Length: 213
Image (cartoon, one colour):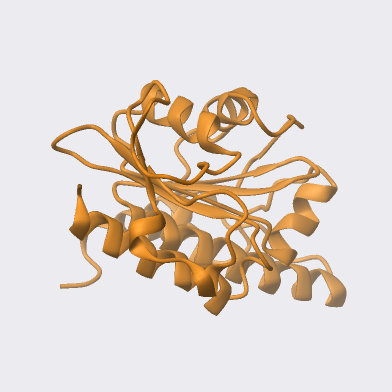
């Protein structure tokens, strides 16, 4: 079932360790099939280099397993909660990428110090409150805290990103860690200045409506 989407999701999972966003078995990517509404997600506790497309779990939005023999990710309930609340979301990524998670450890959002942040996020990367893994609680914090951004930090935990599809969500996760690292480095030198709101809006509009083919 949904073989093409399984293949794509498997390939996107490999982007997480390649971009230093996860270690060992942490993190996950999910995708929503626009035709069936089913969600595909990584199985729990499987190392990335051992994953196969056939390992991916297909579920409905209520968490019933449609296809798959392995246990789904421990973050599944939160992914499904986000999908139910945000019909515009087609992909979700969770990572513990180190620089972004350092801000999360302190419960701090990442202000817009960089044009790249204006481009991709259109504003600061917010930080939500702490929530325990295993229920919908994390998903609730994501929905409550993410606003118009495609990324949110969770206090003392890590990063969640969303997108119109899974590839967009993975890109947002890569960019979150990239800007977090640059901001952290800048903070070692001094105190950078935040960009003006009008400039951020112009950057984001150009990036989302003009940039690219």
